[in-house]
Length: 454
Image 1 (cartoon, rainbow, N blue to C red):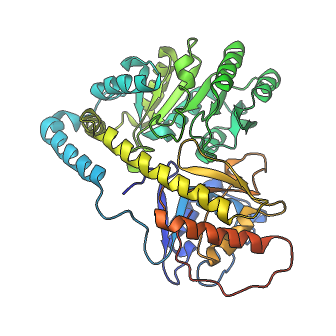
Image 2: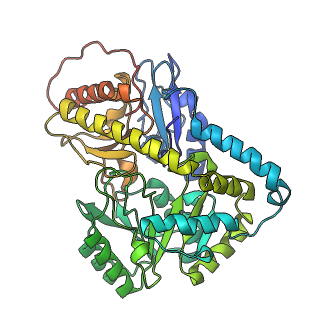
Image 3: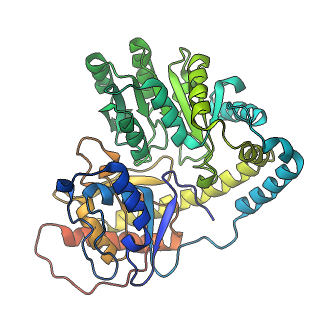
């Protein structure tokens, strides 16, 4: 199964008369408890749409947006799969069994917080492929990139500090920085990356503690910043002594021209903290990532990690190391890169054929998704119930923005949709958009909901 999406990687199957809320109530309950939303924030967004959706216990716009940002809703009679067999998963199971047999006695004990030494050495070599030079002692193993965000925020941010952050951006990063009391200051993306003049002006006025960005395979747009933009961002950060937190993406998953080297590769001043993960390229459930940084900051991050959870599972680290050492990761990456490139091409072709003239979208250079902009006056969150009625779902764009923008955008992800369903899903989305435009239109009979998330 080709599946390595970056958000939680969860997919929710709606079959027959079951509702979104019935199948995912625990997720909504957790959101409601965590956010402690005031009563006056309630708004009946998840309204009754016939067979597919009913009113939820938590009905705020935040609930609906949060759920959509976390889950890929697969609509239809069966969860879409690319066949039952999964060569990478089967190979990993064999490797895991071998590691338990060979090293289980030591790996099942407490382990150093820095990580499994052979894996750190492997990563030191692996990152060289993408131009990033890091010694093993400059690499900290963490429980996925999410823990990397948490450790950085825990170490660098105090209540009330300003954090500069690209916009749009990864919603989980927003949540982590907000949870530590940071005030977020957006730096908008354009066609070449985060706008450097806005970034520098923000540094001069607000002196942020750090700047977070995704230079390649940007989520949600799929764009990659130009090398010149990266060079200028780095120069500004060095001049103002502001760390850049670079959320990296595996350099083997790209479309078209090879992306520029990571910002960290050109960082001779030690201002960039690079976060990487196996979740996007291998299995999301592994929760295995790494942080690359200068020794002083890495020592602080390691101390914070030791307080948080002592260490990442040595058993999982050793199994991933052996999986990579035998070049199984390379084979898996090549396979999924070919498949994602095919699905991306199908999605772009379908959008050109099916979308109204007022709709625009990004063309992803990496990653698993693109950002679509609706015609003026349409709100993606309000459009979602109508789309579900027609048998297609998407992620509203608002969770990727921090200043109330993004209501007229939505994310389309192609990583977990069967290639043969993409055109039909886009057709139904196009019909939903056309019907929602502010002009009189009759309502025809809806087709059965058998198309998965785009």
